[in-house]
Amino acid sequence: MRWILRMGEVLLKSRPVRRFMRKALEKHIIAQVEVRGAKVKIRPWQGMLFLDLIEGDSEVVEDALRHSFGLISADPISSVDVDPAIVAASVISNAPKEEGATFAVQCKRHGQKGEWGSQSFAGAVGAEILALAPHLKVNLGNPQWPVRIALMPDEVGILGEKIICPGGLPTGVQGTVHTDIQNERDFLASWLVMRRGCRLSLSSETNTEFMDVITCWDPYHLEEKWRQKLATAPGPGHIGEIWAVVGDSLISFDNLESKVPIANLEPLVGWSDDSLEILRQRAGIVKR
Image 1 (cartoon, rainbow, N blue to C red):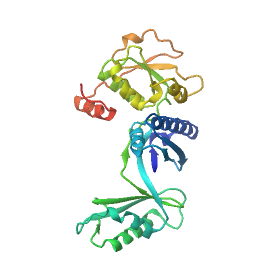
Image 2: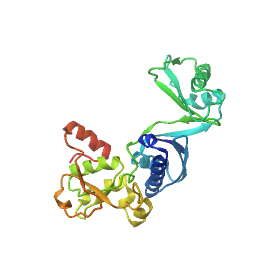
Image 3: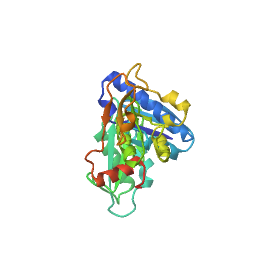
Image 4: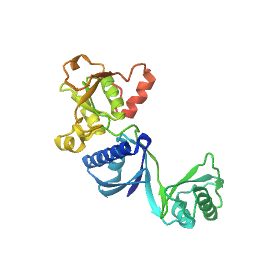
């Protein structure tokens, strides 16, 4: 099985920074998949990542992707020849049966333009679908059945149901921050800075009730093997160097040693209860 992984903010960086962050993201995804009992291979192409399942279940891979900062979405993909008739025949089994049901072919081209452009290929596939299922109608704005395809120079990818990922930056690329997670609010604040690319340095007094959800987002905290594999920082000599603290329990951080002034991060200031509830769901915890 194969997926297309889409990065967001990473692609806005300069070429060397983008390459550094992409490699950190690849290592993180591979680790996330491996701790869940599967193995994958990643190949970068045209600002995207192609992920191939080597061993294990697709469900655990998709759970790993949902818990990998730096990705905005992932699409299961099955490849066919660049032929509108073949594409139509491959997707027609998913067509709605009711008379007058609507569909639209949503095509995005990747790589160099060949014989087809995205619009012309989408139109040709749509015509083939109508020939196979004349009871359907086209609705480009709000179709009941969106046919999502990726047009590449040598193949067409038929995309499955989109997997929504957390976005942000890959874990660790913005350095290390220290936290003492004692309660839900501490964890939510820490989750937000993790999403901005920071790796957590956990206080020895961190509430163990939160360790399962922390390691779900970052295998670095599982055991030494993963700390060795996933160690990263914004530059040489900065791995493990703490530049900030996060959370409401800031008093215990007074004795931290650092080469730079310590910043206090308080990302939850001003958040409403409704916004916090949405954040709880995104971070994977239930209200206590």
